[in-house]
Length: 163
Image (tube, rainbow, N blue to C red):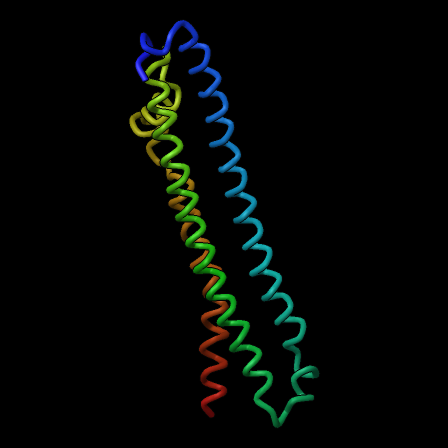
């Protein structure tokens, strides 16, 4: 809506919307950090449980059984699935944040200074920021790194079950 069609409260209402929307973007980012912490804890905990129960005494009880290998197979598969779900969450949050910052950029066109746009100009153009990596660039590789032990578990269990 155009400033003149809206009326005299345009600037005040725009500022309030801007504050609310920036707060919502911040909350999405905080939720994204919480989700990442959740998956890291869950996947690390699952590996810790396997290492605790993976001692020889526990599995010797099932010496003539395929239970230990099936357990490793299930845990490996579960870990890989969780890593892919986590990767999907990261991509979804990235898309959501990107859209929110585009909207913030649109709002800032009606304000004296486009703060977020200026920040990106600094990050992209200043010599001091030449090595800047976006958080998502780093973040998207973590699920794949944490999937490695689960892939190894899965392969080990498949080889053991095939024998």
